[in-house]
Image 1 (cartoon, helix red, strand yellow):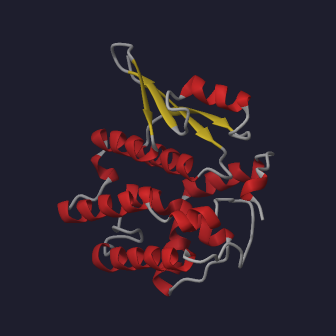
Image 2: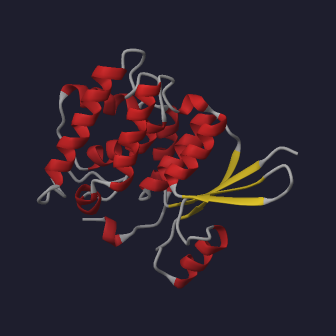
Length: 223
């Protein structure tokens, strides 16, 4: 019996972590069902619905049964990505030094850039040029674009992504690309080309189309 996968996601317009897990699932070629919970996360009804899928009470979560019909839950986007990479090693760079670098910047993205996250929340539908540039945000932007330039210069000769071919590292930074578009962030030439490359990816377009169709508005993510 083949494993059957379901991923439970939060709003496609607002949830950066759901995007990361979803796009790696799509790029892996794995067949899966998806459940999108696009409603205010603090309501008792939403919390109960999320707990129905996720033991941590957070999304995204990947749910599947193995060949022995045992049910498994993997929560946290980076954990989902690492699980998928165990059976699809092409999701990380092949070279061990590039792979270590890709994991380092992915972990940095996973745990860092809190000032940018807080002041420029993900909002795919909006265009808010000039908003969110609070104290400390520029430092986060400068660090992110420095990462992009270093990766493209050092590892990107075989393709247009951070490590040439598309990898999990690109998934980790994809929501930042969308934030830069939303808030009209001005970047250098290399970073601008990388943003264009990311936006041209078919699954990114698919996600943005779904975000446009969501009919829920979260006021705390709007200016």
